[in-house]
Length: 312
Image (cartoon, rainbow, N blue to C red; front, side, top):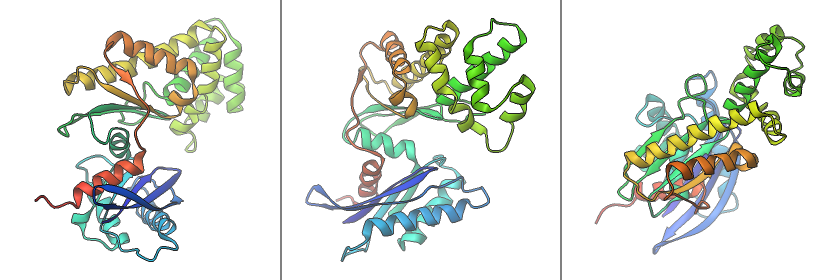
């Protein structure tokens, strides 16, 4: 069985093609393509098609056998059971010339979770520009906390760190709190010289969650240098992530949960990662952190195999 697993993010898309034979995987090829955007956006469907076709073609180049048996795409912004999921699944089938029963488009957090824990229960925590926490039992039951978009639910992410830092800078400028070099650093990064300029900048169309997240390293650096208010910002976000993990563990009745952490905020901000682990240890002393067994493409391949394996 020749299967394809896609990890489609907003920046780029990876496709891994592997053969499942006699109980083991043999990788055939891997390719990259452009990223995706929300299907409802003006170019959403076109971008999705291009991401799938380009990455699949790159993975299958120079291969003599290119007929796929099935595929799963872990895609940014796809909610389980949504109209967008139905549309993306249909587009995936069309681009790969497969029946809809052979393919599935789902959220990239679900394929990342399956990649991290292919054969056992576990909880995946993602803290990057946004955040999400998703867990799964051995029986396949899942529960999720967070990931509802930065306008509604950004706490625990790099967006949150930058957003809180910028709010702090405005309180400093007003005189509600003592001034600090962090304010000048944040405003310099935005090329702003006044609170009014900051207010105008953050509502520009190109700013959004990524604009706030880009400020997070300055807040983390201030915390590293001993700024109490910056430390409190990191601590608040860390506590939110720990509470999400604890909630998922409770909902799934995972007494000794295995944890995997992904995302730039956890991977690049050492102090923040340390605060998250401390907060988790206080709430769930039995939890253990592990490196991921595999990535999102491998998780997508595992789901594609299950989708296309007929029960005996």
